[in-house]
Image 1 (cartoon, rainbow, N blue to C red):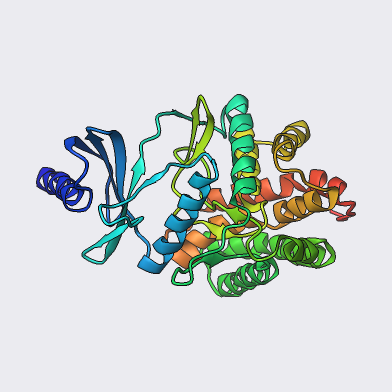
Image 2: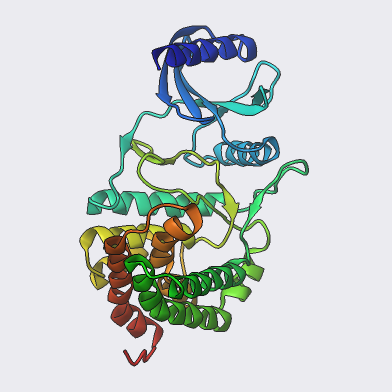
Length: 342
């Protein structure tokens, strides 16, 4: 292990010398490693920087680095990319893209646990979504595009839930019998969310935004949001995708409610208010957020591990996720004007 770490340190220093000849390396440390993704903190004569080996294809990195450069240029709070000696946003070593970023000193935000951190993080996310508008991807880049894809994605997840139920009905384990029983209601929730999304302003909003109207981070949370004196910096844009600006927000809300172990209505209103104070939302758009919260994403995420990733099925986690999904129904039914009859 020590030999591997020493080799990685040596590699980082060598790559800096080869691709950033104008900078003198004083010290290098490894911040993250394991597999392809590696982050070095490099102390240079020009200050600290972060060298990152990215676990994405070259065309995808061409898209994400161009997007990050666009954001930094317009004043968004994202780390600036330091160009290589050849003026490129990234370089490729042994088939893997690497980029150099300015180092951001800040404080981690514990958004699930601390309300003040959540407030700062939600407002930072809203500013990020607002700033992403207008970025046109390079012709030779490969963009993630979820704009307008929610109906298809909902249907695909719903069909997986149903298929796993059919599979479970043929199995005798406690986990599979529990899944078959709990999945019945989750599939009904998925069907309801699919119908409500079709009746919502989602398609109209997608048309209004256009193809380049907003990007989602897709992995926003602790470690990727740093509070600084300037505001909240958003890090790690490797999964940027064109999308309506709600998926990231829904994930934050669900994580907060999970931590609180209840669906707290005043807290929900506060979170939406913090977000909308920076990125205004209409009542119809907020209804789409409620619909996305109604879809059983949490239950699906728990079930996906054993059925799709081959991990051991845990009955307790499955029951907890089903109970969490049921707990949201009174609140969301009221917000969406539904009579669930359950």
